[in-house]
Length: 356
Picture 1 (cartoon, one colour):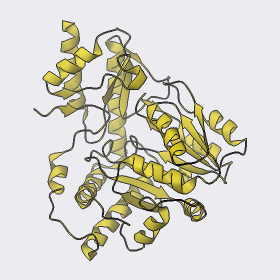
Picture 2 (cartoon, helix red, strand yellow):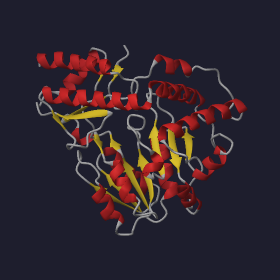
Picture 3 (cartoon, one colour):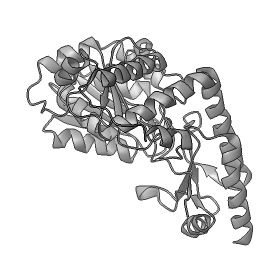
């Protein structure tokens, strides 16, 4: 039995997308691939509101995130941490042999512009990592306000993870001044996992030129050279890129404004449902994700049991991540999902809660 995915990723993939992945194979050094590649990157630039380079990486997003650290941290990195994945990014930075400091806030709290400003005012750092939408806690940090602070520090290269937010709300990369914006495709893009996208500003590419030990697979300069030929340094996941091409067409057919509005409405519905049924919202007021809701288990119910019973009814549900497992639960509402789909799982949850 296939369980409908309401977890923070991977999420449900439409039949049309799965069919596109069955498109007959082409050689990745053939002109047909270059045409496909250029079509995808051109549409991504439109979606991301950027004129900078957009690269396709056959990896998880964390591959591109590690690559960004290896390419762009010259002196020392400030890792802003407010959940499991931003904590992990700090560990990855250290594992790459980079000098780095974590700036941690409590899980459920956002990274604030003031925190970023105070860290960068020390002059110690030439790069930062930041997760826009921390999926472990359902917290969305105020990226536009943080971006304004970053403009005070032109020597600092910004590396921003928009893994679970890109395409669900407006994220104008150039206007924000993000030097390297990274995301995966298995969340708001509603594709199967295995493909990452990242941008590189001219400032980022110049930084990379002076950083030794970039490796090969994620070397930004290798991506730059391949991009001149509308290609990738290594063999790309062509089937996923076919799927991305179709999904981008579908996104623009829906309309960006309508897509953002749909995500906002689903988030509003889920937050209201959580409160109505005696649970709390784990993230701080004003910093709640539009792609998933992280609820606090104020009722003290057995979330493991709810997860089991939902699974038996054909729904995949998440009963919290890491140190807040059992204390919180997360329901995703992103990608191709519609409000009617979200109401399916909440209806099932209501029935289970009544029987507890």
